[in-house]
Length: 523
Image (cartoon, rainbow, N blue to C red; front, side):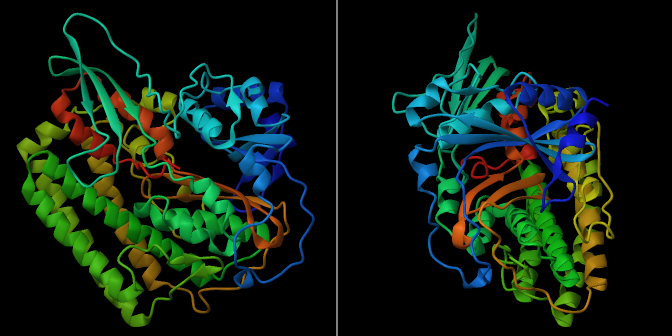
């Protein structure tokens, strides 16, 4: 196997299971990436970090640490003498992270200092590399140098399509609904779409810099708010990284509660999407019913857990809240009802001729193309890509409560809807099993601040796909660098392909079947 030699040289990293790191030079960076691609591996994330030599700080209780990070200035002002580029890959053996040192003399040298781009092997790398330059001023060899997160004052050069009868339709960034901003430029002949180009970054918030201003003990709250519909996944990934570098083993009850929260988050999002997709197909009955079911779930969660959306449920060392016996009975009853009603509604969707006509054959993303583009999560599983970190790289309690993967091959809107219905049923089963077997004991333990320079990762399969966090500790319990990665990075480019050959009027339906995050990539 071409990857075996790289794994043999790699070192185990704390945090996410089956994750290793390997220092490389520019030549071996490209060689290893090529071997990953040849072995069917995927690019998970790319980021950069300034190198600083930290002195080990005294160990203290992390909950006692407060105040903004110190010592991060060199990463902000572009004056660090060295930067490291990172690339994380998903492989059959786990996550392999490459670390490439890049020497430079200051911000002015960024334009002349390149690392080898990976866009030729992994198409989704292009936007990540452009974002790396916007955030860290580290340039790849990618010929596409258009800014991605930092919008230039002189405008953005979109790729034009020429030909008889071709015209453009501009949609966004301001939309009719209460959604986040994104620009979509369609090149069409009649109603048939020849090309779609996206422009995101309108909600660029400098999230990665904000992390550097927070203590390690508070970073999970920001992580939960990167993309609010997957707050549990992002905050769990952050806490997994922090706990890994701190050598903290959370109580079994905390692991079970985190999994319960994650499955409730998955159910809530799938319910909302199932209703919205029906509405886009002109089937208002589906929207009405699933809106009701989702609202009933959110009210039950509010009563049982104190929050409708679990933005602060996962904290370092465990969970913010426990689940009482009464709350467990209430949640179990609600989840059981959701499972029954969703199954009934799924049958109605399948039997409705108008819904079938709109869903079937729309927005096809073939398994071959999904594999080439490195598509992840729900969208990938609807296109024959059976990747699910809960199963492939399980964290407790998923090593005991093993989910059944829901995979389809058709790759159209109907397949993505079918995966949602299948995952609702499976998450309802998991949630009931977790509630029925919650381990006794504490739901939280203390986390001690790791030494400065510690590095760890988190990887949690959210409802949209795998959420990844790379975390570096600064001195005195501060954050030197935190890179959060949402699977929407991989899946947004795939939407540009799925719309080709379809009519413009089907774009809202196809777009909703992907339901990707704007905020999750507009870091």
